[in-house]
Image 1 (cartoon, one colour):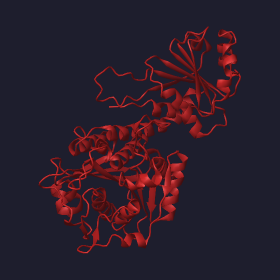
Image 2 (tube, helix red, strand yellow):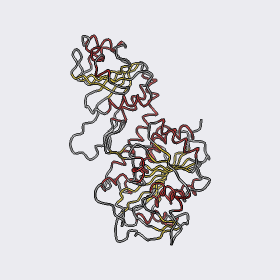
Image 3 (cartoon, helix red, strand yellow):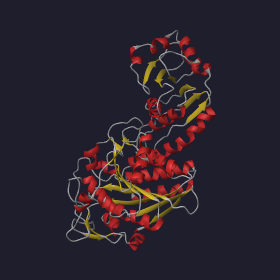
Image 4 (cartoon, helix red, strand yellow):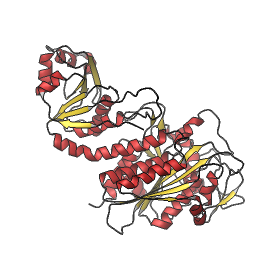
Length: 490
């Protein structure tokens, strides 16, 4: 899987800094050497540090950006990296500064000198997030990040601040690992087994198999997976860290481990990326892992529907009619609009079984949301202004792009079927919105609910500030913050 970097916290010792043989990183707050360590480094370099910091190249740096000096004279280090981070920088700039360090995968020991910078913990989080790399299927020796030490004036305090952030990072990495895995490895059985293993962290995990799903009436979900050799499943993860008996908050994820489109088969070009169509379930799993690792004082239930959408003699056809657990009948117009069929049953089961106080579902649901928002923002749809605003504030605080999209009766009317209660697809116009309207049919009127369409943000073809290209883990940070801010016992 991934190889997360371990960061140690210690006091800055000038002699150790000057003699450090690997990569040396100085977090600087101005364009002049001001700290005791920086002045010692400048003296050892015979004024070289001051000259570098007075150069045009350094002068163009923005907070969070870095400049490298190779084989600095007077130091034992192979590379001296200068990272600009003024004391009044933002959280995002501190994480960007850490990412500038973490993106360089060197096997040598990296010593980062931040001294009394108040954003050192956020810097360490950015470093850890960007140091991630998915290496499970590389046959060549992996060039993973070597040991990292963060030298600060108050290591015990910074370590305590960084501890809950480390739980978030592990949750994000778990999500990224799941989304990056190929479908011949991450089958529905393997996915469920990885979730079941989180019982060791204190989560209660239940796996509902096909016979149980049929008994519950989940024909919409089962129809999607009936053409696959991999059995369909629903996995329920419960974290009971809040007041006993209080209603949980619910997270629901689409877990299509591979999506060919079924009989409405997708074009060959780009189909290999459909290993990421379980991204919603991956985010739910990552959030539940984070909550357990940091001992969140909240009751949260995470439910994921795991299926594989394959063409086969037994596969669901366009024109089929299936009955959902709710009881509504659905005309299947397009078998590639399968994620909403999975979510319909899991959303209803979550409400019927756990009576949650609120509910958010995540899904790589539509290409239409990418047309609308690109890869910068997740589409947010909601029936409840308060919950939606709370989520958007949490996403903004974590730097995870999200944008509210409209809903309305006019869009809902498009879903009327000639032969059933509703159809699963009604063409290209407003495709992301009509998909959300479909899901809303399976949400009770009094249930605060948000739907997050992460099709454009779950996996990127280029690197972002905190992630290499590939799976991003978008949503773990925002949902963890939402739960911490709004749903934890104080």
